[in-house]
Image (cartoon, rainbow, N blue to C red; front, side, top):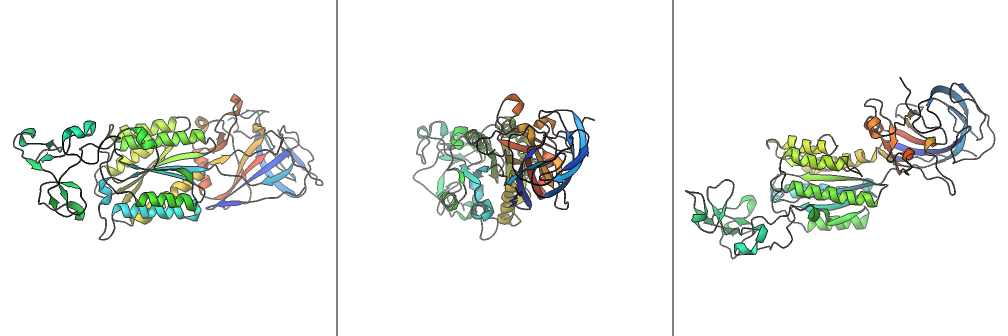
Length: 488
């Protein structure tokens, strides 16, 4: 049978899977064919004659005993027909599939997002234009995306109030504000304020209806003039409850015209308002991502925290405290990574280090930090595109065997052909994440088959993942004994 190869391009990376049966192998997926002799020599992998048409030449080092993760080393080389290599192989070739990617985006919709960054554009408009472009980008088709915003109101807290009792835990009602108190202190009379302060009546801005003081003053961001109002708002209406943020505004679903339209419509209906309860929002996002990953074990699920503000509400508010939330999700099962996109004025003290610390805790090294003095829309879109590429390059689906067959996990090898190379290099199986070599990399199953579990993903070590992002071809060869690193 002539080998057939189908290649799929993702950015500059081609991916294919070779299902092969090797002479002397215990692999249970086999391919047929006639014609072609194979010859080879070497220590450890032996020689033989294999079935299959076509000529192939390769060299590799074979290491391991009969089990995945073995330690019997024996380098060999050979040339032969069929899938060829260290022993003669023949089989059929089919397309490999990347692990499906799902993003749960937690988008900052606080009042500061409504600030203008140019004469005609606010931060909210610049960021949401980038999101809409990403949702409708053909390269995003099929990626799962879900969306929620922060802050969200605490259930039961009213939209407006005229007295403190109406607000409950979200109170007090902002009827007045002490004129010089820092932090802000709310009042009904001057007696409620620190010594020397006056209680100023709170009103509403004539254009955007936001709460303001003192009456007669000019509201920020073109909000109009502060005027007397019939009602006010509760001072602490926004939730810190992770469960509130875990419920998506738009549920995670593969991007197509329908999903993209739902996301765009949701954004169009949202108005930026309120503070920045980062801890509660991130906790909820990770909770939703984890639940989705548990329901979809063959998917890679990540969170994207997009914000323009330092944490102001909900404990913890420190960079280390929020990073710990991200770190615990990364270390959990299933593991959830956190990407961070920060949109800040370049003069915001400590903002970049805070965003980087959260990203580091979430396993993504550093944040995408966007200066509002640049093209925010393009920079934000570039960040989303890079997140998509980074997330897709590192995990692949375990190939499905033919009907009636059973996959022998000890007969799978990963090979990579660099863009500037003609021959593939074998990536060694290392068993688990903790055994990844910082320089040489490697790969492992998401579930160790030696424990009796059934793996669903082939995961690249960080160094190998970085290598794959540079392009080339990734191949999965099934049927020849899995190669492991030599013992030094």
